[in-house]
Image (cartoon, rainbow, N blue to C red):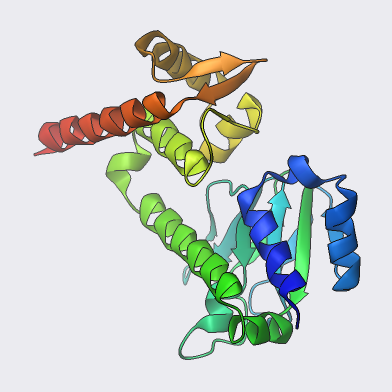
Length: 243
């Protein structure tokens, strides 16, 4: 295992896939490690529940969702999941190995993924601090998303959802930050209508929480602080209303 493997992981989580899709240097790194991106059509399955874990599947482009049947035979589907997401990592590093995927993952849109053999990935974790750090961040994001999905208070508030997503996208990025995803993709990720998204964003533009550039959302460092304060205020108001 080489440092190039960790460089690939760091690059994937630090940049939007669009920023390096045609980067010759990055493609050379992938070839050196005998890795390649794979394309999946909308509606296809990335992962089947209870299948053995052969690879860590990293979603770098597109939207997907998880599916699982409950004990009553009802299909439970998650909200849409966008990049960057590591599927199979939680099960692979679990202290009591599960050895199989606990949910199915279906492509909502066309998706691009990088699949890394699980034993190769785990070997890198034992030899690279960089790979370990990337994996911890990925697991932290996964746990945060699960907690968010089960927080009815937040999920019932579209404004909170948008503010949280903006903060998540900005994390660790230099300012001013231009959100790479289109508004249609943002609405799909948050499971809200495009009309609702535009209405909420218009209010945020008026409040000075966000700006726009070439039709995309732009966030300055000052606005990042304002978004954080606005989210805290929203949550406090929701708590007060429900107490």
